[in-house]
Length: 138
Image (cartoon, rainbow, N blue to C red; front, side, top):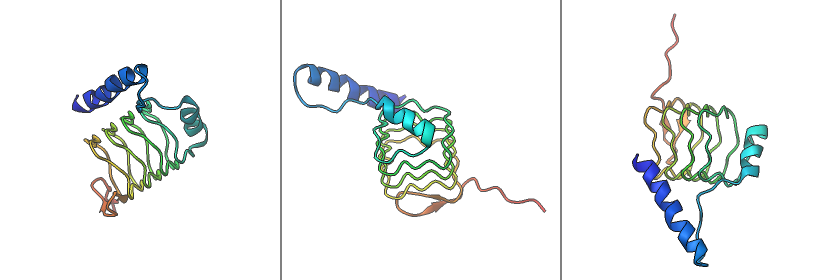
């Protein structure tokens, strides 16, 4: 709930500022970038802020330098995704599959990672999380 309110607050203050003629950053994904990501799984430096990618299957996608602030990636399949230096500020990554994802240098400030799956996942500080690596049975 806190995550949603933070993103709504950004949008709420952006709209009046734009109407008043001030420069503000609105939280709205570029529809062409969302389509490009879904079709090609390659979207470097794309504007995906506020995108609804809930449950999307994006395994192996290249989203280096992408702007995913306030994006909904809940339950998304993100195995092996390149998130190097991406901005995931206040993104919803609950229940996302982040196994083998590379988050080196990514901004996860305020992001919700509850119940996300990690195995050989490179975190922003280059540490590796292996919380959900399954052990092979004999």
